[in-house]
Length: 128
Image 1: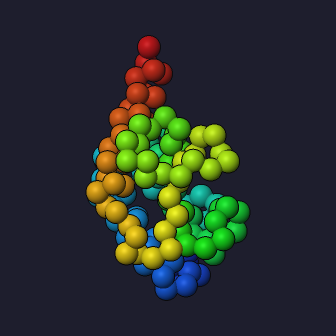
Image 2 (image 1 turned 30 degrees about the vertical axis):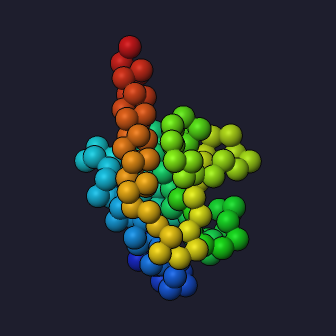
């Protein structure tokens, strides 16, 4: 599935939330990071996974409503504002949005910067 096919499957509010989140992420991530569709949802990675945007309409995402923004190594992020939810997964921390108005671009931007620093450290540890 590509992004257009995903958008065509989603109810309007989920489509808007996914679109806003994707734009924040794409604007914030450095050029070496890429987006691909994995499990029919947008997945962003650099040296390792950085984050994923999973609308509730797509099965197996763990959310019954809204759109989940999950950070692959959320357990390693400082997250001083406690913006992310620490659910049952020990590694992936997330935030679920039920409307686009709930999206805090500044908080997401700060978390993405930290996630990119962490991702760069994975490359550094490979070289040692």
